[in-house]
Length: 475
Picture 1 (cartoon, rainbow, N blue to C red):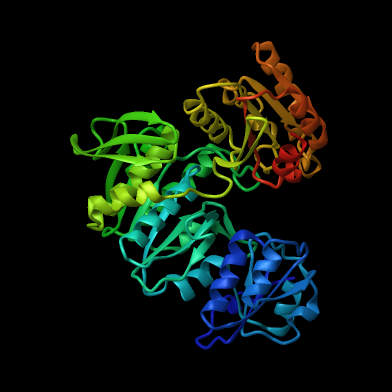
Picture 2: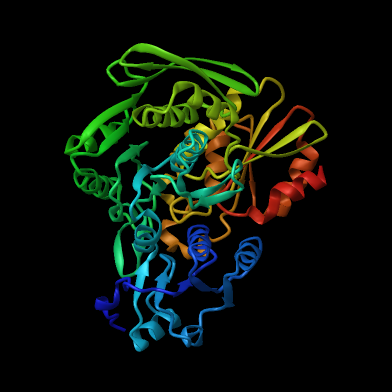
């Protein structure tokens, strides 16, 4: 099927919109935003289940279960195609047959949400969701009434999106591809006034060949930023240091180097609070408090302070907002405590994210053991490319539980990650590591093995068979 690319456009007048694959985090948020803007919105997906299905229905979005040509029988003015949708999808065939106008999610965001606003974009392999969430909250507390769409649920808003009347739109700049008809990364679609670049590592092995491929994409993005734009770049990443040499815009560094404009100073922890000093041009600016913990999160906050300062937000408002920032669901989120055993949920899956999350949690744990539970399920973590790198990720964990990847059949047989092998290698390093074929076995093991004062850190980018709630009930 040859899609008519002349129809890859948004017409001047739009009243009805259909979203293919509406139940994804980003597409669901976009559907709600469009509904709030007054459009008549429908959506379809092959896996309709709560909470997203209930959320969309409550908003008035009519959802169709399954991908079928007849879902487009009412000939909507615009069809938005999610990046998980393949060319062979029957609704794609029908929109082509009917000659309907279509676009990608970033195209729709640009037209209906970002249009007329100043975009503040957060990009990088790690930390996008936390950084953009802090930024959205500070803008809100400063009375700037921001709009945002973020890849996690902000506890302060109980939402991952917001339509504000203020001048700023906060968005994560994802390097993942846009749609089957547009294999360029999503961040190519935005023209940001300011950009944060947190890190550049190899990820998304399903679309990138290697680290050099990732670096080429980021170089193209950075070199395309307008001269009037500001790029805030983390100073502790050698890949990033190479990439920013291609920038034509103004660049300010943040991190721990004395040569950087923005620097993280002394850090002290008095749980649940972390106090950290900020230096601007090597001069003390402030000591701020946050309930976030871990150096990586403090660096995320530092980048946001740099943006807020540029926007002339008073320092006291920044300080107050950081203290009242409640965090993001599934990012170091305490799910509960039973028998004096704490269960924490985190989205970490890349080796660096796993390592830094464990290190952050360890930094605030004064008693008991840190039990790390990991489910590899992304297209990258299920590949053998990180087989040895994960060894260093679990160095600070006291007890390690590794699940067999639940979706391993999606990966070619010669490229598959081995949880068994990782556990064997960790044991050779003297670590107390255990392999599990399924989630039930992990729950049974932890129910018997966990002790008072232990902290169980569960890491996965998926639902992990609802292990958090089931484990708490079993405990």
